[in-house]
Length: 388
Length: 120
Image (tube, rainbow over the protein chains, first blue to last red):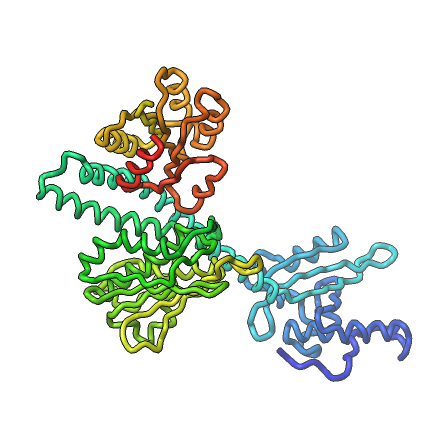
């Protein structure tokens, strides 16, 4: 960009009836000449430049003495020149009085800018063409902003489509999976029993099925969280009982992992929460403990104050390295290397979303010397103003 | 009281598995693939089931529409309904259905049999 002259430059126009200093016309010329946001200049009937203002210098990069007398076609791109656009515009302005066009134009230094151009034909009172007035605005910034907006919209649309696909795929997977699970469970629960060798195979298939169901459900949860269709259905219940029930369901799983799960509680801890969702949080934390700290004792302790309850899930495993502590609650993150442990890396992310939707918080306690210790703090009742 | 359970579920494999599980556990089980078929079956039945196991998302007539029609019919209104929900989030807002229980798919066989024994 060139600097504009400190004093308004008088339009360079050779004219016989030059106005006297201080006259209305003089002042008007000074005004036009000093406008910086618009290139305003005049062309003779053939399209040669007759006047130049500060805005023109700023937009196109030419000083007045460099451009006066030159043809306006030099602002056009080679492609536009090839199709004769400058003369076409002048002809249209002459025919119709004015013409407006938007397109790329070329600056003195060869760079391009997106211009909004209005060319108005100037005629005398007998209709003879005297020349043209040309007003050009540099809309490059606006164009870039529009392009950026478009890119953003495309990116958002891609994410939305991905989430929609995830949701549809998860739903489609869920039905046949449910059928497989029911068939296998039906076999296992037959009153007349099963041959022990077949039984152990069916049990393994059933466990794999359960894992698949859990993975698909997690995908569905994530798609709900990201699309904002994640809703809570709160009801009043005793958290201690709910946690004990989850632990009971994990008994077999814990035995296989070589761990014991102990629940310590102050007693009845009532509150209004979404029971299935809270059970899911406990399930996710227990699953992690039994996966990453297999063979060590796991303890869940519960306590409460008048308005809050606290749940701590602790294990005696390797703990979470400090470098990973910040990111473990993010999507697709894990502290342990992927090759050692499977999973989507979504368990803690979903747990945090659920706890926060209840107006609570989940944190990793950092002061303990050994193992991972997750602390959940939940209001007994979500205050109406809190997020979620 | 009869020990017949009506299973309303559009997925053939799930319906079949449920019917077999129920029969294994001493119930008589009938299947319908959507709400409309279930209503037809109930209208013709002389011996009404003691419970209806109802899926929600089905073609032709979904679970909610079936439940509405069932409750409007004085002969059928009293039959308890257990909802089978495929989604743990959306379908849990089933308060208006007035189900005696909502089970997530796939329900564990023990959970299912317990619920049926309580209400049937």
